[in-house]
Length: 118
Image (tube, rainbow, N blue to C red; front, side, top):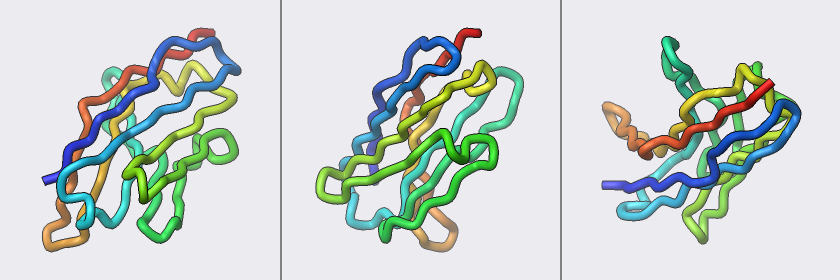
């Protein structure tokens, strides 16, 4: 089992920045990748960014050039630096960790609210 604890959400004006953190504990040696998803009211949860254990990253088109995901394997922590925030970035952000088994195991944090005011 993997436990994920997020922090860093809040209220920010458009154009501002926030940094989300996610600390993993438990069976961390099994984790193949970590990432961030978000879910806005009335919408489906969507991928924001992901980083593999080897450091390969992938971003949603809507956040490319504005958000940066990073990871410290020694600290079992992943961060999401969010710059140039827009009102449409408002959502609950969830930390995710996955284990590449069949079927894939996904672990989720409790979520942290990010609100961007115009």
